[in-house]
Length: 248
Image (cartoon, rainbow, N blue to C red; front, side, top):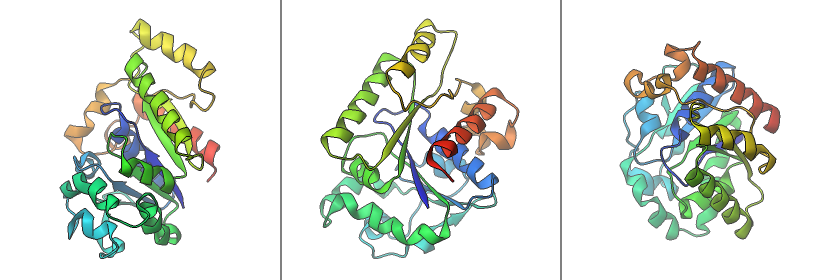
């Protein structure tokens, strides 16, 4: 099982849209795929039309007192399942802080799921915290959407510095451009210049598109209601690039 985490310190960069659409593409290709919505806001859970609730809350789940399998919900799509968000996840840092070896807790919790799934996609809350470090130690790959702006690039630098300072070299970091508006000079300039500075940057950029914004209205992955749009094609290309990097 490959564990992929869509993550960024900064919110509003297209992280959840990437998690939902990439997971859908993985499942559509025949891979057994699970999405765990770790964000208490529950956007991925909302997109999949599932109630954001975990029986007993996140505290019971993280402490291993609840059966993870019983919390997993089906979606409307073959091969794609969801471990929904719960508002109690807002206290996840506190729960982990009380645990023994807190940064290894997620990895230990997820290990038994290996035989059941080909891909596990973690949709992470925007922060740099104990939860973040636990995700870094559990995941094989961090998929990091970045908007081509100064502040977004700054958070990428902070993430890479945090990984180095905390000896988290076991997780690969694959940034990619998100919400790109090529009408803007700054966006064009950053998209052209950054590949020389960040060797692991994925080549595919996701455009800024109203079709992606409509996910909140449609409550479906982009490919269900607008499969031929530019953004859908970009996500397909991005998924192919990710698979080529990490192997199937």
